[in-house]
Image (cartoon, rainbow, N blue to C red; front, side, top):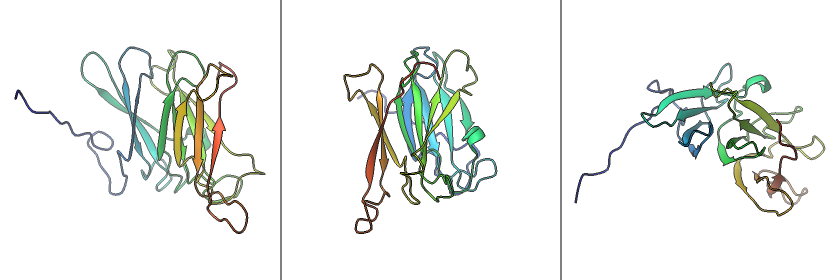
Length: 201
C-alpha cells in the first residue's frame, strides 16, 4: 500500500570508495551543532587516513531542513594517525561536557601508547557554535600507564548513559576486551567508567 521505501547509498568519502576501508562499520546519530537536526557519524576504522594504513577515520554528514551535506572527515588530529589504530571502531553520543551540544565518543582500540601495542584509546569530539566547520575539540582518554597493557583494546566498545545520581553529566563505559586479569586469565576483559568533571573543554 502506498509507495515503497526509498534507499540512498552513502559511499566512503562521498563517492570515492577504497578497498578495505570498511566505511559504515559503525554508525551513530546526534545533533552535534544543536540546530534541531541530527547529524550522521560514520566510522571507517580501516581507512588509510593521513600517513597511517588502517589508521581509521570518521565522517560527519550534516542534517538540515533541506538535503544532507558533507561529509566532513577527520582523524586523530595532533594525537597522530598511526597504522592499525582503527579509529572509528566504536561510537557513543551524549553531551559529556554539559554545554548543550551532543558530543561524539570514538574508539581507537588499536592505538599504541607508551610503547604498548594495541593498548587502545578513546576520543571525545566536542562541538559548539565556535566549530561551524565541525573541526571541534578532540580530547583523548587513555588508561594510566601503570594500568595499561599491550593488547588491551581499550575503546573496542562504548556506551553512554546516566548511570549515577552524583552528576548531571552522562557517563561513558569503555569496553576493554583484551585486558588480562593475571597470568591465568589472559584476555579476560574489563570495563572502564569515565565522566567529565568540568563543563569547559
